[in-house]
Image 1 (cartoon, one colour):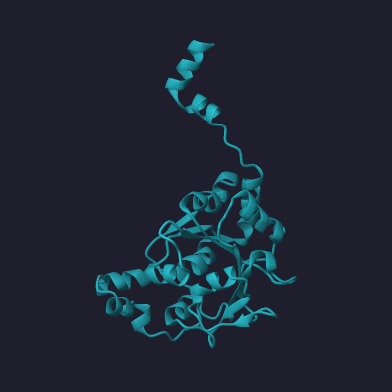
Image 2 (cartoon, one colour):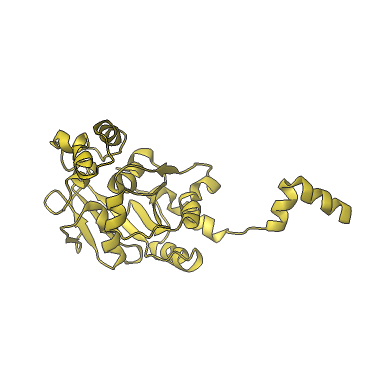
Length: 248
């Protein structure tokens, strides 16, 4: 688990995303719960990745080893240390999707991130602007179009120089919940077929998952957002610079 650190006001961050960045879907706050779910959060019998959409709809919810509806999500959240090879080697992928070879399915699971076994007792989610006082937030997750994914997931890259991680092929629960834990980095992810379906992503949408220590970079990006096309052409385009010189 990451050490607690100061983060921007969550309601302010939510306002910036919705009103300045014009994110269309509600931002979600996710918590890796090492001591069980936060007070006031309700258990849900849904697939793990589905907590994103549930929280977008205004619910405070969690999944844990007793409350869930996906063995794969349980495995990637570290809830199933005894998961059998049918899950860990991707046999379910080959059986359910005719385009997967057994070798490719095994490679998929080998290359996918999972939270350490037993590291959390629940995974909780709530609307970003409705997180109860005292609840620690580990991730900000948004469903956005590619342009906003570039800006939000790339916020750290323009403030500290750290490029985000791009995920394609892994299960959505691996990409948006476990990948930021291991990489300690912002992640943009297409998601898998199931993750996209359960969260009702349009063809032009994707996930961004921002770890706690990058929240401030999102705020700084939005607060300092300015683009000067004239200046950009002047400093990078020889043809434009030549014409500008002729006109001076």
